Length: 150
View 1 (cartoon, rainbow, N blue to C red):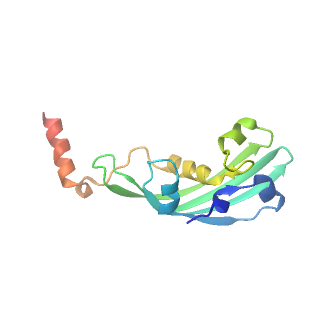
View 2: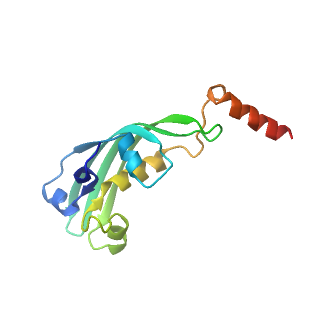
View 3: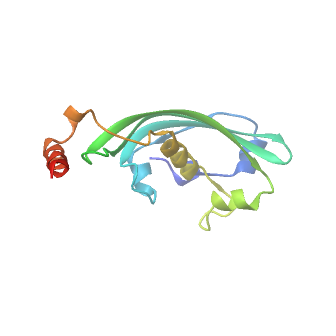
């Protein structure tokens, strides 16, 4: 389970230490801690690095690999989806709007890396999430078919 220190990071300190890759595992406990209900669990390896390309900005590079558990849109049972995502974002050092969005009162001055990783995972998933029809819950599939016939 990620610790508080691995979810919240000090961007300035990380950037001052130079570019280095760090890794955290996002597991069922991690997804359970977040105030969300879209991802039911999973096991995702997140690698990130923080650098300061110039005095006015900070760059975060992330790589995500693993699986998450979501609800099937058809039968609502658990559906495992692969996650394979890489991205880089640059934040202006003086941007209050960006700083506000990824910080909170419990951890002043720290970047909420956990929420940033969660959002990156969610946006990498397909919009429609279905089992193969043969793998869906048979009772739920019968209900859907009977509703369509009426």
